[in-house]
Amino acid sequence: MIELVIACFIGILIGTTTGMIPGIHVNTAGAIIFASSGLLLGFLSPEFLCVMLVSMSIAHALIEFIPSMLLGVPQEGTATSILPGHRMVLEGRSKEVIRIVSVGGFGAILVTILMLPIFSIALPILHDLTKPYTWIILLVASIYLTHKLTANFRDFLWALLLFTLSGILGWILFQTPVSSGVTLMCTFSGLFGISTILFSLNDSSTIPHQNPFYDLDIDFNKFKSIFAGGITGAILGFLPGFGPAQGTVIAQAVSGASDVDDDDTVNFLLATSGLNISDCLFSLIAIYIIGNPRSGIAVYMSYLLFEMGLNHLIIFIFASLLAVSVSLVLSLKLGDSFSRLMGGVDYKKLSIGVIILQIVILYIFIFYYQAPIIYMTIALVTSTAMGMLPHYIGIGKSHLMGVLIIPAIVIYMQMFI
Image (tube, rainbow, N blue to C red; front, top):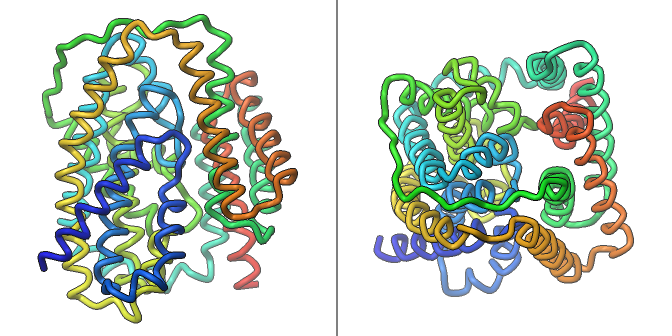
């Protein structure tokens, strides 16, 4: 048991490190560990490696909000939260933002674990009934959510176009033999990271002095947002292809939150961070509940364990609780330290530095996995250009999540037609 606790803390350390580095996806770190498993299994148990992967993914999912909020470098799970989060940072409320996303993630993990008995009974039945119609559910839900995320018919048409184009881009990229970790890093760096920062360079903003005081009282509405995030994250972990961007709409509908006024912004961020962490945990639990991994980390775990039993599930739940508890403290400490360092920093120089760092990290992994440099460069430029379009058109960037959803629709359609 002691060795599993050690594995948990090693995973937390790795997840915290990857979460703090802009542009690094947790699946990339998982791929490196899995690639080394042949050597590691010589002196470590499969359970040790799996606990390390679980705690790493939980820690990464919580810590990654710090660079997303303070630097504007989103991952798949934080892409929808950067605008309301940035708004509060530019108001000098970075400490409040860090506490909101940390509490939202921690609370959602508890909700997911408490609801696990219900999920264990209902979701396997639902999974068997809906599996042949998954592609129809994804298609209908995509059109519905696109409509809900747009204000008028003109925006709806643009959103559908971007959704389709990003889906075509995703399908082309994922058909190549290039490592999926590198492909995801390249795609999300361009669609949501570099493009967002490049657009922000149009403004001559400077990061203001950050208020050392903060106020976060958990009332009924905030608790409802945390609960909505936890439930929605479980739904996302069950439904393939959908990410936190789409789940945000569901969470908003359940919680009644939006990102318009100040109170609703807090509830919006609570729900968004909650569904991101809950989705991370449930995608791992799905191995036990429906026998199907729902994330890259879950796939690696399914290869390491011949069969996941109830004992494994209990161990992973306790590892998740320990990981999210320690990560909560680390998130507050690191976020506060980072926000103090940002006061008075030239935002334009910082943004350029972050773009350079993202590109350097991406090409390190391109060389490491021996991916074709010219092809990946074209993919990065294309993704970045496509990521700039929503800013100029005036619609949300969440429609670019078609990069994952359309490939999932095509795959499931081929399986059942």
